Amino acid sequence: MRPTPTQSTLKHRLGGLALASPPLLLVTIFVGFPIVVAVAYSLGHTGGPNATVSLIAKDQVTVDAWWKQSPGAYGVLLRDERFRRDLLVTVLVSLATTAIVLVLAWVIALYVRLTDTWVSRLLSALAVIPMFIPVVIASWVILTFYASDGFVRTVADQLGFTAPVWGYTTTAVVIGLVWTQLPFATLMVVSGVQGVPDALIEAGRDAGGSIPRVVWSVVAPMALVPTVIAGTFTAIGTLGSFTVPYFTGPNAPKMLGVDMNDYFQSYNLPQSSVVMAVVVFVVASGFGAVYVWANYRSSASTGRV
Amino acid sequence: MATVASRAGAPRARGRALSTVSSRTSGRVLTTALVLVLGVFILGPLLWLGVRAFATGWTYPSLGPDGWTMHWWQAVFDDPNLVSSAVLSFKLAFVTMAVSALVCLPAAYAFARFDFPGRRFFLIGLFATNAFPKMGLFVALASLFYTLGLMSTFIGVVIIHLMGTVVFMTWIPAAAFAAVPRAYEEAARDAGAGRFTVLRTVTLPLALPGILVALIMSFLASFDEAQGTYLVGSPDYVTMPTQMYSLVLNYPPQVAAVFSILLSIPSALLLLLVRKHVMGGQLAEGFQIR
Image 1 (cartoon, one colour):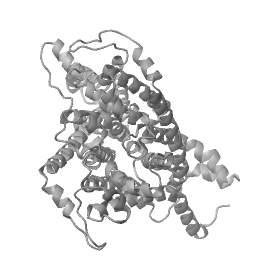
Image 2 (tube, one colour):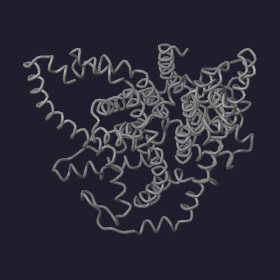
Image 3 (cartoon, helix red, strand yellow):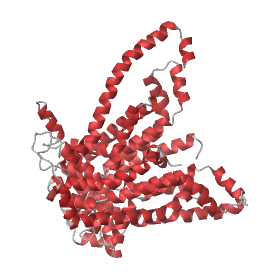
Image 4 (cartoon, helix red, strand yellow):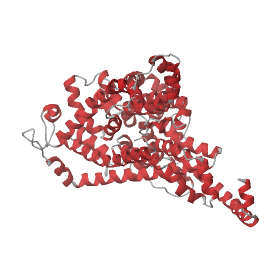
């Protein structure tokens, strides 16, 4: 027999917390703790858990007591023109990728929603394919496809004109990121648009609304939350991305994911690397806040909060 | 719909029909263009590289290779380094998947069925940790790993791989558990089944598609991880993706092409297995916090 609510509440709640704790502990120890350590390091704390890394590092800003904080390392980087340029490029690439991915996802989602033909099924199947390919491979195939001896240039040459070389350019980075991020966004948006009931769309049509009008005032608002989720994940995923820009991008400007790697491994400047990570984290948190807001809004509107 | 059209009156209906014909042709052109562009954009790079795995050489600007050969496949299978990295990749992916399931599935159930303090906060917290760039994390983790003696160990690499799976492994199954109607569970309990029997015979089977998607996603996340594996594992633990970094620079492109195909086969097979559930919204459902 089921226990009465009063009997169960406390035990039930604690039991739930206990069951939920293993991944939380894991993440706290191996992600949460390092984040705190990294932020401390970026503010000049080179002792304690940071002692090993800072032992051989160059040009560090340090503080001599635990209660002091120094923004020095941030100052050095923010005054560095190269860093400012790379930060700008990273944010722009992230925004451009997100915009392109969302537009593509929406076009596919609308095809799937409004026409149930082999074309719509083909489109959604195509968009999901990159999910089947490891990112390292994806970056490599994108590079060879748009390289100076790649497919695009070859076809253009056969047709008698010269196409630009996109390999090792920021354009290739955006192409590669769109390629790798498209499946997730498409799945999210398609699922959101599919969730709009037929009756609502038909009601809109019967009221004399054209298809664009119905999409704009009926479908779009109802699929807003999955769109925001897709956008946030794409933006955050691209901001800190390493593999795609590492393989396909130019030597300058670099995306910060590649910079972080270089500063740590090649230039022996782990503190700068960590400062970049914190800066990217701050930008990503901004995107993340939108995600949390969208989720909260949807929960509130359906009375789940 | 037919009744609506007839009620709308003849002239308007005819106007609509005419415009449908013209919009249908332009629509068809647009659709074909879209399919073509997306097809070349997505499949083009894969085919372009795939052909390379069987090519003796390739001279720009020829549309096809100079000649055909299976030589590169032999080269890859004869290289003990490449074979051992493939074995290691599979081993790591299986261990990561299993440990991740063990750690996260009970938690996913708890997130779906228990109302404990901070539930929402923890769910979002799991995600928030994902927003911190991996590289910054690795710098800080390096010290921790040295202290704990995890550098260049199998366990160290597994921990790095686990980090990339926790969110999938908790969120997607949590959504799947939450979608199982409570009435079914209650009916089974009323029929005298114990809590555990209900879980085993009612809840788990119904949530299985979501769990399967999560399992495969984490297998692939592990199979895909290169940056952290390189930092923590090398030179003792070199997986296929890590190998790819040096392959691209040091081997002929055909070898990298063969290796790429080999590396993509497991992902493609596994995802085909759950394709229906992934497309059916299990993945999408998992990313909406309830």
